[in-house]
Picture 1 (cartoon, helix red, strand yellow):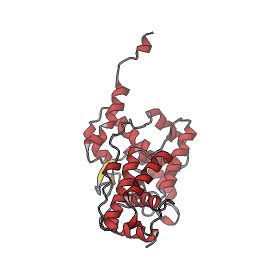
Picture 2: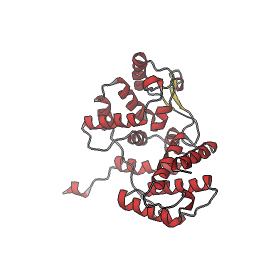
Picture 3: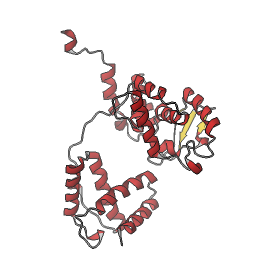
Picture 4: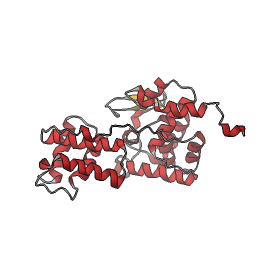
Length: 280
């Protein structure tokens, strides 16, 4: 079998196990990079040994300075591949990072979000940015959103089969509703809320570029992505006094611990403690 055959076989088995398209894409991307390493001099992928995986991870850390979370994803992809395609359990526990990284998530201030929206004049682009922020949606959720998922009567947006194969609802912002009505009249989507050519789903890469370009245009000196808008949504709700359990439900987090990272930012932002420098 060649590499494409391996990837096809892997994809089919992941689909049988009902992995989401985004997870399958992520697994395949990491696996492809591993299998196409020039240093692999084996007749087949099945013959690759643990030391080759160790060398690959070491190379990725040194060359690409991958994060601990990325390292875990790579190892999970490789282990899942051998499990599903070759029915072979590969023990990679010793390659997983032993110390967790403790980084506060990046987010935008309320005024920074406002700036990004104000400088975005294209109606479709503006509505996409407003949707990402107003409901705290993931990029994949925006792409998969259908017209019928917007309910102006109950003022809700239904996110279907999101991460973890769960449906959930988020609030439909009144300001977003005004923009989306204008958008409907101009673009007249047929199925998905945002469509590209030939009425197919809008490209995730295009949305990433839209957000990036609007942030640059606004003059904000931060790297801004769709996920940063989602984080900002969560943090701004927390700063406004919203119960963290409601925020957990809105974000679609399985565990409260995932949501609690935002409390560290909010506590600092709301704190009345003055720096000793201010007393000088």
